Image (cartoon, rainbow, N blue to C red; front, side, top):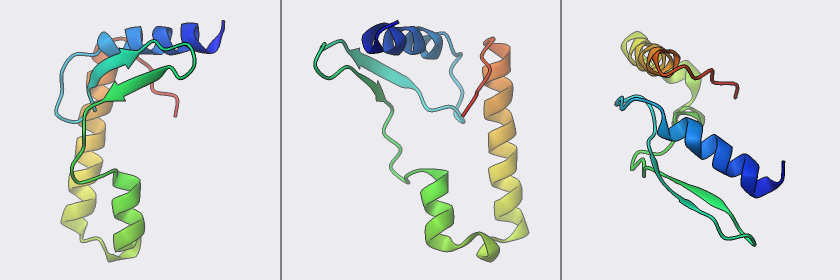
Length: 88
């Protein structure tokens, strides 16, 4: 499939995911042939990976590590319940 078909297929999967505070939400899709794009929810605190790079993984408290792990598990459960397998 071409790039637009692949993007639309991914957007369909994302749209099928039940709402969960630990899963970034799909806002919309731009179907422009020159620059197709998926528009996702704005995360004002940025990504977890950027946070960890800035803070340094070895500087996290046990509570922070547990909180991140628990949120990740909740998000993965939400995906599984929607029939989605996260492959990234």
